[in-house]
Amino acid sequence: MNTTTLRISAADRERALSTGVWALLAVVTSLFGLFLTAYVMRLASPDATAIAMPWQLWLSTAVLVAGSGLLHQASRSASRTWLMAGGLCGVAFVAVQCWAWQALQAANVVLTGNPAASFFYLLTGLHALHAVGGLVAWGNVSGAPGGDRRIALCARYWHFLLAVWLALFAAFRWITPDVARAICGVTP
Image (cartoon, rainbow, N blue to C red; front, side, top):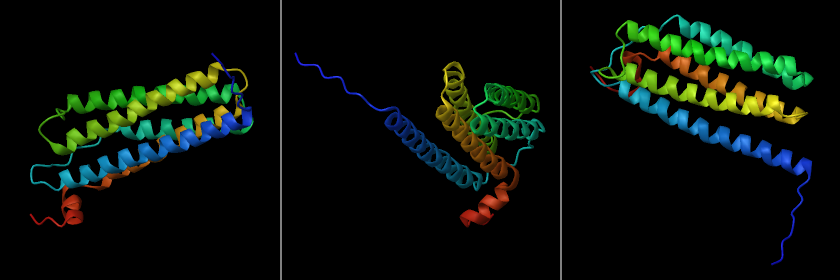
């Protein structure tokens, strides 16, 4: 049996990782875009009613903005301190999201019965799942020696999560059932 060892240069490996991250971001963008489209279409139905947004969403947004900024600084300086602080913001973001869900449930905004609430839980849960995936990547990067380029890839992913969150947040704030009906051309 002939075995050949394929040697891949570090530069080729880093390019492959970067391409992989861009491909992942493209797929996840499509996923969230399709779910947002479905959200608007479903919100146009007569049984959809707007839900009150918990104030914790503002806090989670601020935490995610801070984390993205800290990871950007980590990427620029290759500093483990900035990297750790950014990752802790990611953990805090997920925790605040859970707090927001608890606040909604305490206000009797549950998963079933209202399409706006169902999609809120779906979209924020999907985003939180991707944030947890980002924390796994962050854990791998923070535990590896060196890896300046990997820190940059991790920061890129968190910047993307911030952009997705801002789009979701804007949709939750400004796309009401009446707006969705106007977008979809549905008359009451």
